[in-house]
Length: 213
Image (tube, rainbow, N blue to C red; front, side, top):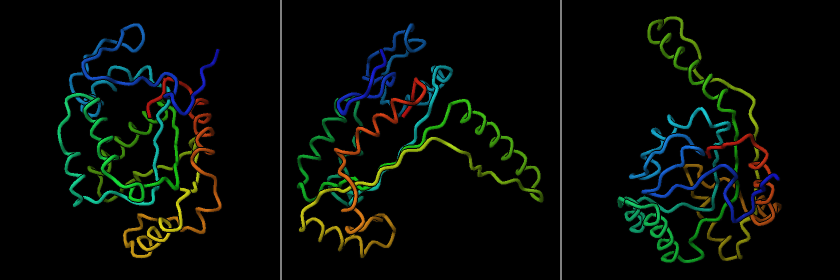
């Protein structure tokens, strides 16, 4: 029976990682103890399991705000966490320290899925082009390639109250970096995150697995 996602589950075949745990050989390749953060082990794990991965999914979010780099709360994120639970607890504490009207709301979420074989072919092609360009400066080849991919984009209504909208619009009007891109008038025409999330789940569930997000 096909396993479907729910808002409380991760996509099937996408395993959660715990520091100190090992991956059963019969399920995910050779056993690799996770004694560092998942980010630090990404390259090592990718090499071990790349032949099993079927799809890469890249995603991007647009939000109503960002925690500024000079915010004292952001400094705690630079702390080195030995366990994934520690980092999760740290993020939860930051959320608790932040007022509801300061919490960023998602206004757009976009997902792009590409087969692993296609990704690897493009990577190898890019390597050859870069090498060619280094040795042939007078006959450069374009490095950027445009290819068709499976995409899924949802624009969202962050469902803020009038005071929050007013604060957001003021920040957006003074935003010189283009971080806040969606005006109130546009956002209010779309569905909420709760209504759109099930379609994101269906999109992820439709992809060839295993998937790396």
